[in-house]
Image (cartoon, rainbow, N blue to C red; front, side, top):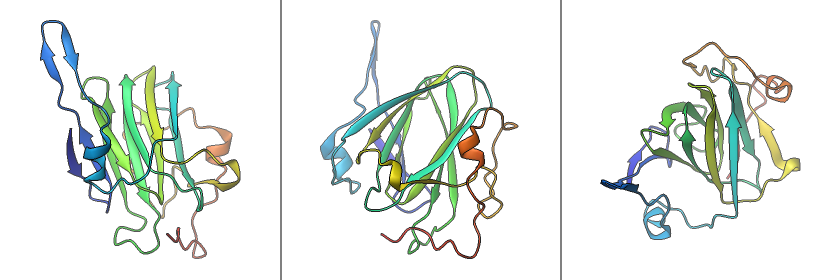
Length: 183
């Protein structure tokens, strides 16, 4: 694996280094020693799988507040998505900045998203599937979200948005009262 620093502090794009031969390929997607080298000190406690059928669908932007903050490691295993993270850490030099990266079955990239970030994606193909590794258990009482179209963040989605859930559309826009997540 090769870890490429994202423009947001503590976040990475992870490029797999597959071994290929006439049979196909083999690639390691997680090694605790390698992830520890970028500061991962937790453990993976939950693995989730999502399937989104319609091209242009946006899911997100979700996060969990402390004490249920989580690190996410995400990989697209079918189709392609534009994966987005937003730094919500109040003490970060990249507070309220966003970064997007294409994840696809073909490019085999992953993203490493630290605690204190919101996460979401837009499908670039129909039938896009993601695998998520989480360092904390899902906690409904700590779940929050940002609006996908919040002008305070101004994410530039590559396609016209479709298929957004009622819940994801109902998050309030950020205002002067939002102070971020205190680590």
